[in-house]
Image (tube, rainbow, N blue to C red; front, side, top):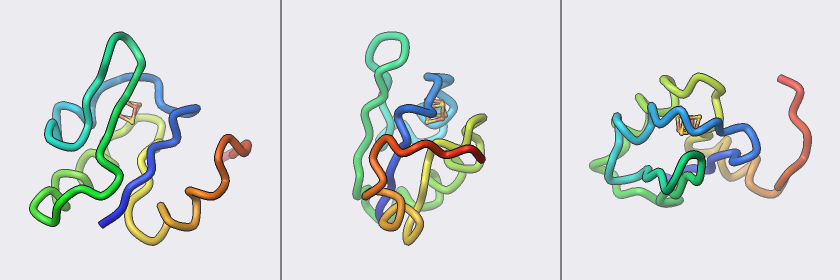
Length: 77
Ligand code: SF4
């Protein structure tokens, strides 16, 4: 699976870090690091993390591929 986190949207709430600590990692207050291609055994955790993110910053699977080219493009959702 592939994931993309919109770091412009991410507020560092760390919900994803609690739910999938092998995939998401917070450095300092708001600097999120993540594995863009997490192993399959993390898929369920990643989906839960994406669902739990308060600002829907985590894009999973096909959507991640489609969105990754956008970079910092505005998203008014
Ligand atoms: S849960 Fe969402 S806002 Fe919080 S750190 Fe993860 S991606 Fe960022």
